[in-house]
Length: 160
Image (cartoon, one colour):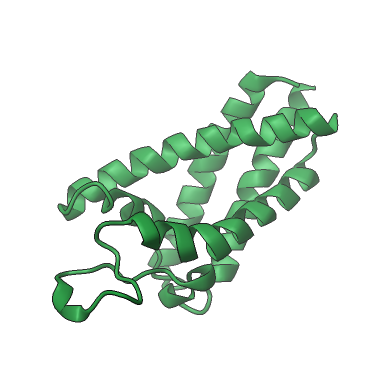
């Protein structure tokens, strides 16, 4: 299986997932801004946080395509539908574990159950499946991640 195809798929998939998530935010389907949440872990300055967050998000999108490629290689097959399933699993893990448990545990500006309002300006933790950012956020995230996975899977399968 072709690693270059995986990287290309990761690049295109990242453009698509980022666009879908931003579109959902603009359409008020969700309030989540994952790049902003990532960026604020590194800086308090909002505009700078968005720029830093988008850079981290783009790198992570391409890096995850390498993980997908490794799994496809281990399975000996790749397809858009298998990528879609991996994307759903990726989205479930992100919402249930990363955004719910791991990010709040390490994010210096994110509130938690042990912080108080007088601790300073804190970012609301996403919660399980990022439900703190809207009831439709889990569905938006899963659709976007499924699209990412399908794109990466398609690129890898198409390259043979």
